[in-house]
Length: 216
Image (cartoon, rainbow, N blue to C red; front, side, top):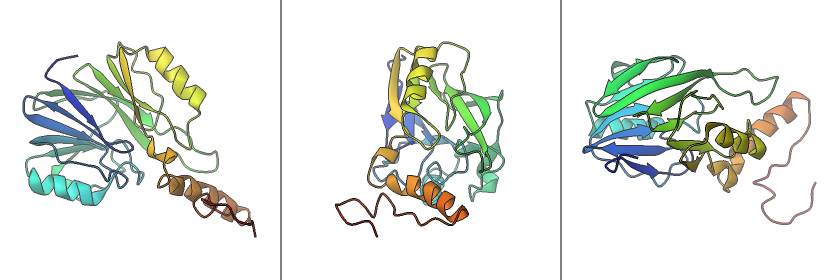
């Protein structure tokens, strides 16, 4: 890895990449309570529309402090900053500051057969870091550093293991991991509750059962 390239991992799916005193922010989200604004943010990547991958308050803060920033995302995402948003799709390559971006994928991994699939982007940064967003899209090229989703309604642990072994990166770090936290249970609860409501069942949530209690 380029010795000047610095990756900072924040809670859940957010991370930043710093190079030559400029920064890139990926998937700033509502769960990222530990977010620290990097210096000179030249680009933001939002992989898809789900609430655990975009927080408009964080986007507003980034734009306010970095008025020249460009937000790269897919065309069904509303960033709140149309003049600074550039829609991209799989196969597109972009240079922004010292960063070379190549986009992959196109579809979010299915969560459930009864729910629609939204669009999704994967991204390769400087031919070194690969992040698939909410997908297991293979980049079909060598990867030095893999940002690996490890816990999601659309993912089994075995699938994350297979994805890593298929790509064979020199290094991998965990992302999409807040689902394993107390706060992340709410996202799982939301999906299960929607399914329960659809068939007329009453679901007692994981968050409500955090301590021992009788099931009513």
